[in-house]
Length: 258
Image 1 (cartoon, rainbow, N blue to C red):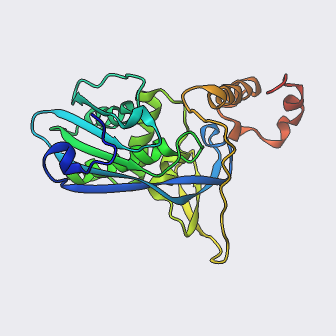
Image 2: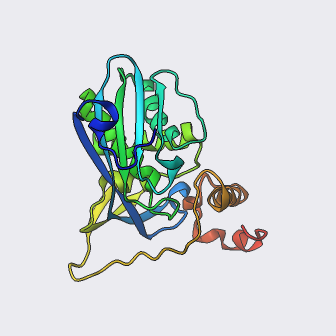
Image 3: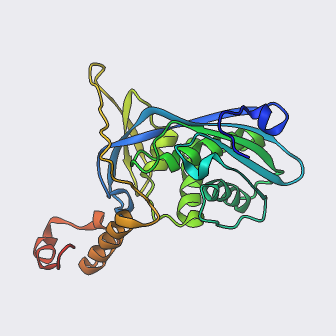
């Protein structure tokens, strides 16, 4: 059974109780610097992930997608709270959030959720972080959790990094949780300190799709992160952020592509 074209009540036989959403993001400055402890400057985009949710009392978690750009054909999938197991599907992001929340002491009775997203997948616009943050927001409201938006970003990052297994930095989750369309979000990814930088009202931001698919858990992203970590190790620093001007001769002696 698919969720394509169906409302929450048609899918689950009852109305949704809560609605939460989160935007995608585009980065203005700072590529591959977040997992190196550096600085980034992203901003939110209009495209969003929207999640409708209603609690259950039997521990079952049912999730349906609506035309999420071909992800598993808009499937309706399920699992039980406390039985999260990575499957290599988009459902892993949902399982990641529930696993992290449970690990932090939250009791999850189960829920039904309907996901709809206009954030393009695999285009470097943080569709995964948008899903994670939207779901974390929905569960924060449903469970009455006292967690702020930075903690929402930390939970989303742990779900993607530790459960899904994607070696991402903190930029995507911080941007999706805290950024807006009227400002850029300057983030120190080591401390998670941030500052909103107003964007010029007359400016227009254009995002061009290169047509090259993007996956955090594999491919060039994972390769580049490993290269950055090898370069840092060769230079004797914890992260590339810690390299100073005196390291120039050692940098020049590194092998390609480091």
